Image (cartoon, rainbow, N blue to C red; front, side, top):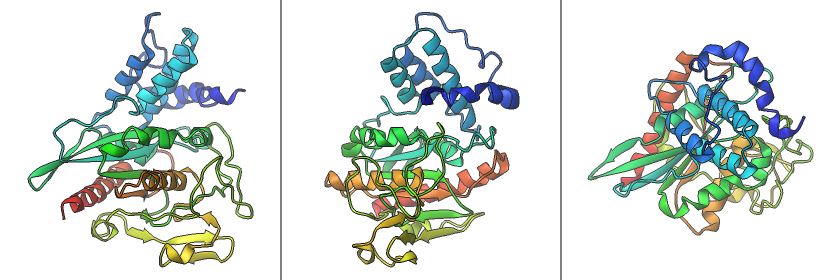
Length: 337
């Protein structure tokens, strides 16, 4: 099976297991033959902002249904790409002119779907909950825009992160990336450059690396480690149901697992695991920080790993999204201090 259709191949199983997740008829769309894929993508993204719905899965599965349907209608690959980017908040998702501060928040699609078809991702919920959110800051206000990234190595290899950031870099005051992780909230202090885990992505592709031979993604230049620059001290004060950890634990070829006291202490070391691990959550953190550095910008940026979740648990998602929202707001409030 072509890797392009692997995600869509799960639709039949998803409909059986998750049929009530989408409105009646959504699993069998009936769009007119003359459709505008970009417009359909924009509408799908806009329809996902129900602040009372703590679930990212409807957006994920509806995107796949519509992508398959648009292809059956004869949509060109360029149109399908526009549809997907628009449905992720990656096209036309600009800030208004009145914001004092502008903040970009990103999440990820659900993953591990071959093991748990009902899997959700709290980071996607966090992103959807924060789209268009405004926060009062002294005499001004901060405005948030969000987007959701695919869990696919090939998109990262094609520099999707950098291409999207390029449209925002000169227009943002902070970038916060979020993904699902371990048992508490981890502020990932030292993202690493390499992939080193066996975890496959949503199209069943491996990252190419291992603990013994960590892999540098194609054409990704930069140091072995970069550093989180959000206000960790303020963020750690956000008490809630889960601990908040300034995570400095990394693994290098030379020393194995260490708790790094500084970025300087990691010079001349080869990354195996960054603080964020060796998968795409660590990689988005690295790519964002590195891209900002290459632009000569001082915009603070960093990655938050939320507590993990097996399958979908609305009560757990509610707790995670509430505390993650507090972490994000505390970081933003520090902009005016």
